[in-house]
Each structure stands twice: as C-alpha cells, then as structure tokens.
Length: 147
Length: 409
Image: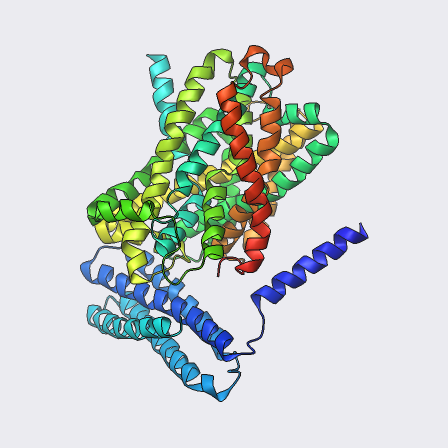
C-alpha cells in the first residue's frame, strides 16, 4: 500500500515538474517564447478566419461570439503566463519585449473583433482583421526565429 | 424486407455512431498540427476496433451473455476487478468529456456558457437512459450522427490538392518544427480515440439488450465490417479538413469551434447548423453509451440484475449506479476543467488501458466452452495477436511519452 502511495507521489511530482519547470537558460526561454508565439499565432489566425466568415455572413452571431471569445481567452492566458516568466539573462530581454508586445496586439485585436461581431459593425471587424493579419505575420516570424 | 431495413438502419447507425468527442478532438487537432502524417493511424485503429468488436459481438450472440460477464467467470474475480476498475475509471472520464462536448456544442449554437448547459445535459442524458427504449435510443443518435458527413462534403468543397493530401498521408513523419516523441504521443491519442474500450463494452452488452442470437451474427458482422470503416472515413475527413485549412494557417485546435472552421468556411450557415447537429448527436450518443457502459460493467461484475429492458424496480442497483454515474460525470465537468483537455487525457489514458479490455475478449473468444465451433479462426487469431502486441506496446509507451512531451505540448 505504502509502495503504491510512493509511486503515486513520485508520478505526481514528475508531472508537476514536467508541466511547470522554471526557465534557467536562454535556450529554455526561447523554447517557451516559441510555444507562446505558436499559441498566439493560432489565436490571431483563428481571429482572421472568423472575421472573414463574419464579413461574408457565413455564420450566426452566437457561433462567432463564442468562437472569438474562446481564442481571446486563450490569448489572454498565454499573455499572462508568458509575462510571469523571468528572462534568465539580459540576452533574452529583447525576445521578451517582442513577444509581450505581440501578445498585447493579439488580445487587443481579438477584443476589437469580439466587439465588432457583437455590434454587427463590419467596418470594425475589417479593421480588427487587418490588425490580426499583421500581428499573425509578425508572430510567424517569431516562431520561425525561435525554432 | 424487414431484414434489409434492419441491416440498413444498423449499418447507418454504426457509421453515425462511430464518432465521439475523442475522435472529433483528436482528429481535428492532429490534422491541424501534423497535417495528414498521422492519417495511417485511423485505419490501424479501425481495423483493431472492428476485429475486437466482432469478437465481443460473436461471444454475446453465441453465449447470450455479455463478454465481461464471461471475463469474470473465465479469468476470476481478481483479474475481473482489475479490468473493471481501470475501465470504469477511464469510462467515467470519457463520459464527463462527452457531457462537456454536448455542452460545448450547445454553447456554439446559443453563446450561453457551456457550464450552464452541463446540468441540463446531465439531466437529459439520465432522462433518455431512463425513458427511451434501447433500440430507439441507439438508432436516433446513430442516425443523427450521420450529419457528420458534412465534414466530408466540406473537404470536397474546399477543393484540396488530393495528390498532395495522399502524399502527406503516405509520409509518416513529423512535419518541420515537430519532434518524434510528440508525433508518437498524438499517434497514440488517435489510436486510443478509435479503439475506445467503452464502445466494446457497450456493443457487447447492447447485444444482450437486443437479444442477439447466433442467427444475428451475419448482420452484426456486416454492421461492424462496413459501418465502422465508413465511420472511420468521417474521422479521416475531420483530419483532412483540418490539414487543408488549419495546418497551413498555423491554427491549432484547442476548442470545438476551431474544429468547425473547415465546414463554416466552405458551406456557410447551412454547414454550421448541420455540423452542430452532428456534434450534438455524436457526443450525446456517446455520453449515453459511456454512461451505460459504466453501469453494465459494474452490474455484470457483481452479478446484479441489469439492462434497460429490465424494469427499474427489478434492476434498482443498476439504475442507481447509472444515476450516480451521471451525477459524477456532471460534477467532473462542473469543476471547470476544460472539456477538450479532459477529452485529450481520456483518450490517451484509454490507450494505456487497452490491453485490460482487449486481452480478456481475446481469451474468451477462443474458449470452446462458451463458443463451441464459433471460436476465433486461425486468421483472426494471427491478426488479433499482432494487435495485442501493438496495444501492449502502446500501453507501455503512453505514460513515458506523456511525461516526455509534457502531454503533447
């Protein structure tokens, strides 16, 4: 019984260690930045696709609201999670600034898209789309640059 | 004519009922992230589930008893208990994921937060299990699940380069930027989703509910060997739609809404409505199956009276257990755990527990005491042995890969 409990504790520790380890090297920080940029890219590009769908009138408002809300929540979570990571050395500071700024642009773009969709304001949707498209391209470059 | 109608309905039900939240999430997620490089896993999983479902169905049709009733008798109480504990825990997790899936589908249609739908869905699942006759329940949700054909239509409308898709499918290697351990981790997820153990428990017990006999074997085999592979094609179209539209854009599937994008982009509002109906039917049908599978497994192990066709007063413990399962599944989703994440863990852990389900079926299906001359043929045994090695390998690799890849991050 005691052996089983020890195994469960050991497994839990391994899982926790694997999921939330601190960043001690610049390479590790780059990897975290890459993962964050990938998730933000996914959110931004989903926003672009949803904006296109909204402008063509190809979906109902509840679907669009839910879908934009989902990716906006994701982007906010990535942004706050990345912000809590400490760059291990000053070498990583520019990367932190870049990803942080793009995370902010993504969340703002998605918030504008959500508002535009709710109000049925297609001009606002088009502006949000353009901003998200640009942010997506920049995130794409970060993803490529941190591989 | 009756036989033809029965075959057609059973066949369509097998196609429509093949997909559940695990298939929807796993195939969309994998298509978006790895393109078609993991498409080969779907036929591997479909052949496996056909093989063992046919065995389970044959055992039930010939012996008149569900396969896990015989497992306890044949392998003893301890082995039966290990089987029961593992499969019940994972089936409960799958059940919770399905309830979450139904709630997410309703959220897409209404924009009302999915957590508000969860108690309603839990009640509806219990009400349908309590009130609707078995055959009507199975047929209704299986046939409605055919709405998922919309993903195949959407793929065709997207006008992909079929040659490139085929080439990707024949290039089983991770795309650039992805590593091998993560690729294998998701291969296990797709495999686990296709070979869900609860589906076999439900299939076998459902045979008893529908009073299969040896005369039904041909019909049962036709449903399995034609219906399931066509259901597998729907899984493949989910993956291909995501590979064509989402993979090049860098969109990952973290939400059910992202899985619908190929349909909405190519078919607009009509496609969206059909896709949501399909999601609802698949996940609701699977919630009924997973909920009942939990009740069946426990009741069969303890020798209680069980079955939807038995009056509740005569199967009180079975029905109380079903109610407790519905409450537990609902409570799990109400903890605010992300249903998509719950689904991902459920299918991967299902894969880890596959030998506990499939090895006993294999042993019972070779026992002449139960099956007489209808035991497995030599060919079936050869293929099944290969699969048993495969599921053992998958079971051994699952947890190390989960830790190594940080659950596929």
